[in-house]
Length: 482
Image (tube, rainbow, N blue to C red):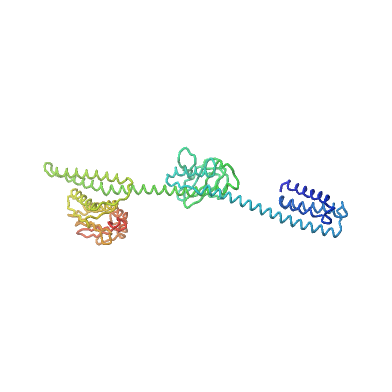
């Protein structure tokens, strides 16, 4: 309690005493009438301590100035009882009034806290997403937004990932949008506070700066702390805002990290796809061209056949140039589109002509129905699967003929069969998809292409030939046209 409250208690009793002196001729025996308001007023505005002081002073004033014999604290039994009752009633009044004042103060604090919470919610309710940017640029924008919400000059975030030993640091106002990476053995990792500490407090940041406040965050894959520098005001009302902003920063950092990781996975998968396309396409054709050149080198110069071979090789190289251009065009992001009716049949017939010229062996192609239309990516996948299966047969089985059959079944699923009369695979009999995976008996690239389109692969092998069958479900095609 402040000294002014106790001084007010003394003044209030003095005023009540003076007023009682002036009004006593009209008050009769009710000499305590004016002292009750004095005690009540002090209790309401000064609290329990000043009210108790006012009660004691009032009792002494009544006993000394108004209870006979006056100007003496010696009183009779009846007056002592009346004075004790007054004191008890005054103490109860003081306690009730003080309790009421405490309740009003608690209500006022609750309203202030509620107002501060609403202000905090308004500031963070429109928290934006930053997943459209890279990790470094997104982290910088995120921390700049956090600084604007708190109203501080600068925000620094330091965090650890569950599967990496590094400490990552990002700032809201760095010279360039970069993320620092500090080794666990570096002296700079001594932040002055443990990242696992759940307290919200002032501490030293990861760059050695003095932070006015900091708060931890822990999400599914990240754990760290956000440091706020240049906070305009500190106190209990700032703590909820700091803690909420730190949690929002942690959630946004995790979203950025996941988005960045997904981009890396997508780039890696795209590189694998390009490598597989080049292996199954251009490299296979160049292998056939190399074999033709070797055969040409063994022939005697002067015959007409040499010129025919050279023209065939030139045509094959020109075709592979077109294939390379197509692969480069496929790297560009384009929406999936429906193929034209009969496009698959024409593509397989062109492939048949090329492979027949390259390997000097007949190939038959049948597509049912002839006007079958597939989605563009499915059509490319089927063409490359047929190409790899046929080239593998020419390279390893040395057949005299190869046949290709593509048929849409009654349930509009797709069945692709490539058979030959060569030596077959090392195993004998029929192996389904799971058995092929377990035994590593199927060509890896061919199996990956089938799985990429959601299909299954089976191979039947005998000493007189082999049969490669691919089944693609309806869901991987294009509505009623597969």
